[in-house]
Image (cartoon, rainbow, N blue to C red; front, side):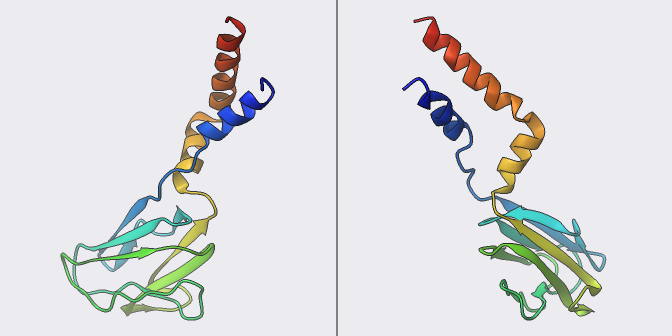
Length: 140
């Protein structure tokens, strides 16, 4: 049991984070932020801040969406359920393959929150939690 404890503890610390929602503003003929990396199952929420635009995926990709033309105050959501990089553009001011008003979203296998946690705290957090737990058990 003592040998399994660090593994179980590691699994508890690295439990999946719920899917995130990422905001992309559509303003001044640009998608802000530009290229974005999200986790599998995350949702991108586009917000029209100015003028008339669309968010339209390049044809022939595993992920496809089309908000149609919308104006200030509108929103549109798309949840990503495939891995890879997916290009998109405004049908009024851009074109497929990165022409004009366009951007891309890269979907990675893990929720972006898990990557951010390890980037922020590093593996030492997991080691510290495991060591602390071992010390508590040994003091009993």
